[in-house]
Length: 312
Image 1 (cartoon, rainbow, N blue to C red):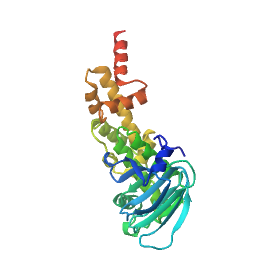
Image 2: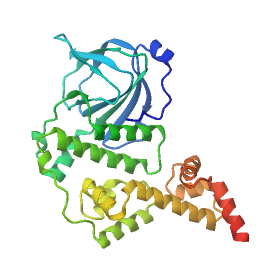
Image 3: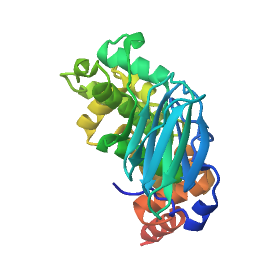
């Protein structure tokens, strides 16, 4: 498992921490159905109270190993285990508050990513793809969990926190759907009821989605909006769209936005800020960052190059 993009936490900082230090959060990005927070963790901690969770919680560990113990608030026996790099803690919604303590087992600093998946999204997904009664769903908590797909989704969201991309909301919604379905499939009793549609997207359905994308590139696109163009659930739509086009909805929208930016740079004299807005980028700097990453040139350099070619 690769490590998150953020620079490793300085060891001196970890030594000085008295409590987990939040350094990244999805709060300002306004993610829907999912909250993500990244923390630098102290080497030792006593008396930390984790409140009751109304959503499903998933914690991904990166860096040094730790010995973690927990018990219900108010007393009771401590139970614990060692947690290593790449392992996860999964907790269902509705649990009681509990007290936590831990101690690092290695000199390496530890970072954690905390994902909180909306129980509303989880229940709706269960109904849509498995016909399950949400009141009968039971997600059993686990510690020291090794699940490559959950870790991969967590790392992808961690990177999205560190380097937000265009259409980040669409990317996050797709990841949240994948997370919900994987939890349903592997950690509840309804997993066997999840079936993929036998048919793929028709040419007409695919064309309708692509036309909708083109017409709304300057707006925030949601997975649900795109799925509505086909009549499939968001999860099934994302899988069928990839099968039909070879790219995820997020990747395809990004491609369209870059191509649109290239056309506007080559064919108009619009300011870069206006081009960024017309193509669905957050601002001019965002356009420059993403455009250079994918095209190897800044927008200004691309426009200058196309102007020189036009002369000759």
